[in-house]
Image (tube, rainbow, N blue to C red):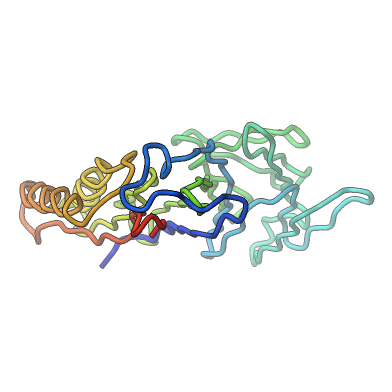
Length: 262
């Protein structure tokens, strides 16, 4: 079974202010890859009960958080806590140009942040940077910080929006997924095989298709070669017993059919 879930959304919408292409066959150079914007990064909070919130502004976490009068609060997140280790209003968070910040809201039992295996206390009222992958310890509850990469790219007479948010599935220590979001290739592979090399299999599949990134157009013939190479490379993965590794592969490759993005 796949070991975790990764969402790679690709949305192609018409671009109303662009004149129709004058190409009738092969697209002119630069017509497909017209512009590329730096993808923004959003932040998602993943809670130990399986729920998650994409951060849109300032928020509070607690048993029954209450904002101060006059404060602009976007999120009020209530967490169940039978141990009463969580204060009514325990932690404040928000986003800035540099990423997510958190600060203990003068809670009774305090807050801690764990980054790369190092745990430290968060001083009450003092904002602290919370980077991707760190964990917040709020009494008996745990919150994991994840970045969500997104992008918007112009493709001839269409606009492509994409997003990717990887996370390890429950019961698995390693993330065995891989993805590529480089125009015109948007694919995600979910490795299978546990310690048998599922992560190597997913990376082999994505690396093979990533070789098509940056091309003006992709034909079915151009797609067959990297897929064959990926199959061969996965077959070469050395596993010590157990079933051989594998991977799922899904996604979108944008090309032109009669001068229309498809």
